[in-house]
Image (cartoon, rainbow, N blue to C red; front, side, top):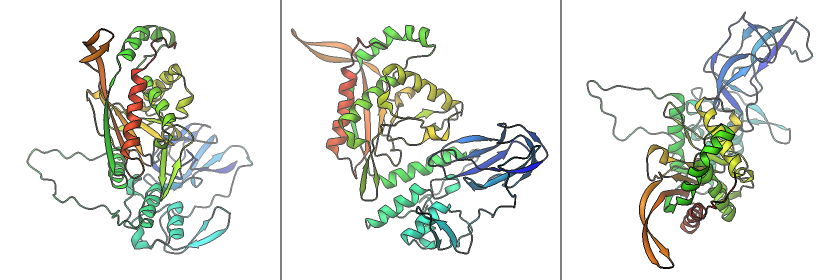
Length: 422
């Protein structure tokens, strides 16, 4: 018999820690290899952690609600056979912030001593503390940074955004402040506690408006060709592929082409530097049954055909609604679209998903009378039209670029080739 440690697994390239939501097993329970043992939450998605070994759950080392770094032991499993991966099982050090200097490994492997964070009321990950040390942030200043992570924790993006504004000489108050006018209560009013995802969305939206000066440009597009084409082929597509053909892949296809024409839309800001992204990773806002929004990412969206986009869009949307997305499928987006038309809205002013610099809202498609030019003069005809609302970060995207980009998206939609073969 051997004792092995079950550690917090790495669940994505940018995931450094996770919060334990609940244990699905209790000490003494028999567990099989790959059987789910607990549920955890990252700042991107909730997921289950499977057991790496078969055996008996001997001890739980991390409680519900505890934030655990990737690679740290969370439980001990008693296996029936000796295994080379068994390890001494001493209780790990608590995750809580200590009052003594902490050794942090740098990128070159050297170990440095960083100032302790003395505020025991707030958790800072080793990565955040290391950045604070490198940037010379005092404890009092670190405590003023508003966190967008779980329970208001400060993430890497939060502290880097703060440092960037600090370096540029901007006075940015990161601390959360109380509302100027408190909410009023009357008899019969119902108090509804925000769930974890709603609190996360609220914090990120406030942070995005604080970080990026938003400007929105609007263009109306004639999508009659797309409407007629989809009506013609959607029945055959359903029979052959067993799934629906929505308008979303048509929109993504046009956006991707426009990004290639205007690559400075596909960027991110790092302090006073602009990072032009090589890959086009398309975020796609999906409404969940709870009313919350989640944004799965289509990686390398420019490498898909229209048919390929249709299939990946359907797959991601379905798994998003069933809470079956992987953490990596919610990370790495470089541009985002949001289909407000699905709610019957004709236009909107969407909020940018940080650290991206732009987002496009797609309005409802409506029949409208329009003036068409013909060889025999102008005529009025019924056309299918929609509004495109393009919000962009005015720090790095000027009106000429932001407006030209959304105009180009509309051009590609209007010029859709009705002879396209799926």
